[in-house]
Length: 301
Image 1 (tube, rainbow, N blue to C red):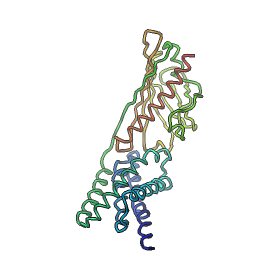
Image 2 (cartoon, rainbow, N blue to C red; image 1 turned 45 degrees about the vertical axis):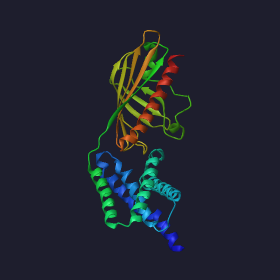
Image 3 (cartoon, rainbow, N blue to C red; image 1 turned 60 degrees about the horizontal axis):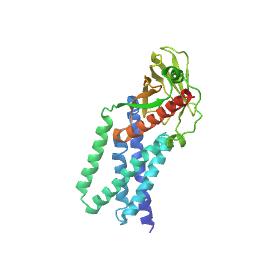
Image 4 (cartoon, rainbow, N blue to C red; image 1 turned 45 degrees about the horizontal axis):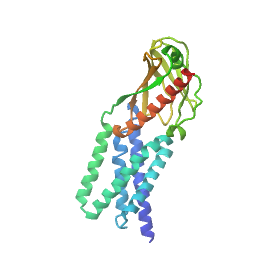
């Protein structure tokens, strides 16, 4: 009985002890390139956690439901260790958790089939292939940029809207986006040093963080474009995303309304893109809409 309990416990402990230093070393290795987090860290390594756990549990004849539950526990352990030892932010870990759970479970079922067949050569070859993919992915170049655009119709002229685009008073409306509600900082105010090209601009967030900006295009009542020259050193942001540029365009619709267009350009440093860019677009879009709807409210008063 004690041996069974020990093997089950080792199935939780050993895989995480093995994988955590690998993630830490890879993070240090990639620090010079902006802290890129490669797709293998969220796909290959969780699969290996599942496979290693399955080896410890191979004689226990676990049901599929029990294997899934054990794998979810393993995923929670991996996420907790990342929070404690790798300095990852809580919101980031919430975002990454679906990937971790899915691929730890996948690895556990792969391992169950591997060890059931008992083909040691095939097993070693498969694990070696996964490690080779991880190494190649870690040393490869990774680069991704994207632009997100949103529009809001405002019942006011560009002349009336413009001053609220350049700088606006504090946002008092409650947050509706669920990530803002659970603690992700949201924009609350913008200040400007002057109303001209080259002026400094600050976007202030709810936790006091400030994005320092420089106006690079100032076409009155038409175009405000600004570069982000400094962003906060926050664990939810650092090494994950760089916001490079923002823009507001005003288009007079000729019927007493104006279309306000908000654009943002960013570089993403976490992969796989097919997963993380969904989140990046969603967060950027909700930052846009919170600011643009506030400008709409101010301008339509």
